[in-house]
Length: 109
Length: 114
Image (cartoon, rainbow over all chains, first blue to last red; front, side, top):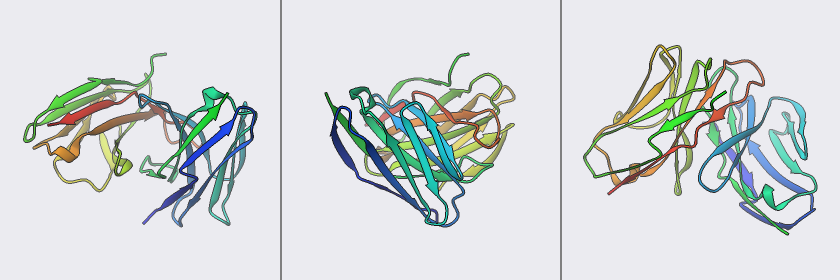
């Protein structure tokens, strides 16, 4: 059974701080997604990774396939980054994702 | 380009009724997937369709069903509604299964069962 574990559950930080959210996953997962969900429910796909590192603006996602671990980093955090961040594991070729429980991030001005 | 459109946005039903939710993917996207989000269980995969064929199904009872039409629009149906079916139902579309191709989510349909 595919499993995804995420930490921390909640994270509060001051504006400008460097943020790290962690995700561990089980055997059988070959693609790791990072999603952002704002109040109201809309979900935005941030990254899909199978190896290495991806960067988009202030967001960086890394994955270590040997350790089955991925991290999402936010540099120079801003209050608009406040959201729930969710990692999800799956495989290329299908959308059958297994989701982590999410990290609620609050950035205080 | 219009995003993924889900209708209706909100729905209130009573136990025992059935409900149909609709999802229109981004133009040109042939893959549509559905997910349920509840406070207790979080996000869970429901179904996945590609070119009118169900490719995968999550661990949900047979009361949950879906289909995809030739124009890639998809519907999901829940029969004999239970209180526990109250949830945010999200659909997502993707252009194909290319490596790195992102999922695009709709804003969801919030179903309340009373």
